[in-house]
Length: 415
Ligand SMILES: C[S@@+](CC[C@H](N)C(=O)[O-])C[C@H]1O[C@@H](n2cnc3c(N)ncnc32)[C@H](O)[C@@H]1O
Ligand SMILES: Nc1c(NC[C@H](O)[C@H](O)[C@H](O)CO)[nH]c(=O)[nH]c1=O
Ligand SMILES: N[C@@H](Cc1ccc(O)cc1)C(=O)O
Ligand code: SF4
Image (tube, protein in one colour):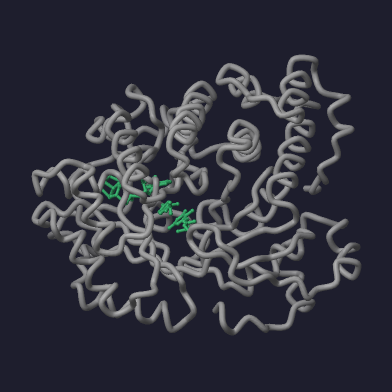
């Protein structure tokens, strides 16, 4: 596969409707929901035009910098009875492999992460039936007592709904208390596809789209930034994707609280949703759909959410690197312990080191930067010679690991 550069001359070959949309966005206009649907269906010569436009908008927003964060996932329990059909992670309490980490174990993992240079812990778990609503606050307090400077990125809107409901508290109050305890930001997971019919099939609509939006807005209002996600490639399609991204954009116009969008490709292999109905559920997105998802997200969110992250755990390092030419400017976290994708059948490993991320970014011809959770730059790895790299970059599409020999290990602090 070749890695096209952002060559806008591609627009000349695009079909008139697609070309008109791309020219509009390149001159500062907004892609409507209906136009988003058209872009999601781009074929033939429209595809390189779409990718070149996304790459250009990425360049204007982020320049040549590609960021990542050194973090650790702590999935403190996988015990959950919500029964989301796509989820391969949840277990019943008596099942083998069911796990519950004590506050001491959670803090010990956070400490190890800190010792390895992590600035963030990303904490999510199952909705354990016996858990008290106040447990979420206790987790934050335990970590902050030991590590006051660790950024805590934790608890999806589903978990906030659970904690607030169990504690009989309103969302604003519950969230304000978590913020006072030291919660720094929240993952915008549990979004899946923000459409009632699709959610009915994915999650029995236990957390409705409306309540997801209500909790995200409440978080932004009390000053907790969140990421935004979309999980795609199962029973969904272009109309759902465009509506979902347009909804995120409307929220962002009101609150400014989203830090990034992370498209999450559906991992099907061990997902009950797929294994129980393989004739009715798609086995994750196609390669074209992955390309178009990142590119259309960049264009629809331009000027509103300017960080588009690719998930290496869903796609693997080589595909994640290619997304840097589809509008992406962030490679997410090192993660240290990935388990949710692996539980659904992904095989891209538990961890990626800062060193590997730096190498992947350089091999794509960009400048690696280490960020914190809210995108403040912490370190810039600009000591390489772009001219020496140019012939390799031009060859494109090679396994990023091929470039290993070019970059001696020097990133002790970030590993
Ligand atoms: C497993 S949950 C953990 C947090 C919490 N229990 C919840 O549901 O919000 C976190 C997210 O992982 C993602 N996820 C779970 N299973 C997946 C799969 N098979 N493929 C892709 N993403 C998946 C979903 O987006 C889900 O919202
Ligand atoms: N994309 C995935 C992430 N990404 C989240 C980042 O690691 C980071 O927490 C965020 O950018 C805030 O700084 N995490 C996962 O566990 N799995 C993913 O697929
Ligand atoms: N991307 C999410 C975290 C996440 C995403 C997907 C997962 O499967 C697990 C966790 C966030 O930090 O906002
Ligand atoms: S996605 Fe979250 S809430 Fe749903 S079953 Fe899995 S762990 Fe439980």
